[in-house]
Length: 426
Image 1 (tube, rainbow, N blue to C red):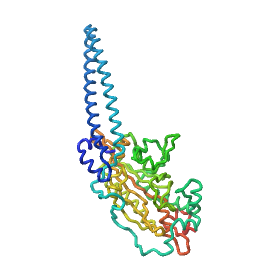
Image 2: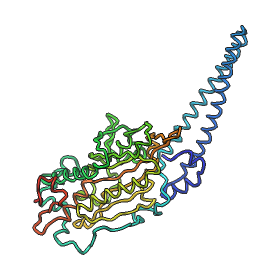
Image 3: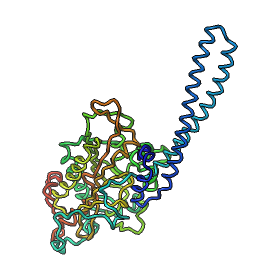
Image 4: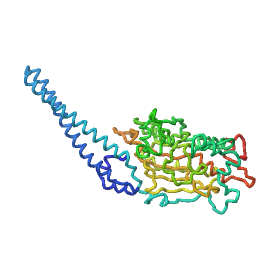
């Protein structure tokens, strides 16, 4: 959530920043108006409260002097002012709630270095790595859903039978490959990131903390009976790991990682290619997340991106790095770099990691603060995260890239220790 003090002090600059995303800014005008009214009510409430306190002291003095009649008159006045104070407080609280509801739907302010643009076509390709379009042979130009069916390692039909469209079932060595990728993603980051296993179902306030609610409610799975939400990524519970807490600066940056199943309704996927693993409702992912100070954030952002890239490089996959434009940023992000793996069979670039800096937007919603060394007050932390390894599309990239002329799939060397010694699938 953006800082109301920033909106209050420079509303035009905030509106201009949000407009870079292509967002309507009329809600911000309303928030500024309500904020002015709310502060006026609070000022009057506080004036009345001080007057009531003054009267209380006077009443005590009158009783000590034996002037009970005068004290009774003042007590009546105090009750009247107290009722007015309560009414103003309730009105001020109502305006505060209305302001919060508006700000919960306002996306984060893009970083100044974030490229301008309206959508994904305006994203900037920073670089290509290990990619030569002409280097792929005919046997690698078979899409993973066909390879998976041929080798009996991916059963889309039965996944659909069990759970509906856009659910899949990994089978046999395909399931082993899935598990191998997860453990590989965890092990390579265990040097700096503390492994967690958070719940897969969370409360509403946990989803609100990351910005997934209320704006993106249509993309989430909700269990109405228990009022719990299936997590779309481990970012959600990890961001709230220290919700409503004050951390010590010496403990920052705090780096966490988790493997979880992730659930997304993909409500906006109409018209998109949903074959195989290109777009699914449930998938496994290793997530990296950090709490940091503002000064630490640039280095942490670089670290998460480097780790995500190294995982793809060591798998021997081709990829590119995109700098997302303001119009394509996730709602909570201030700056995001996407990694896209090239899948030669599908002939597509597949997003496998979004490495994002959220500034203090999420932590302000989650009320995660830290106490700077040598200072009296507290500050809101920054949050950053990225996929250490997202299974479905990396799985697809491996199967298509490593398909052999005989139809088998070679297992990348870094995964063989996790594949019970298998060197080939099929």
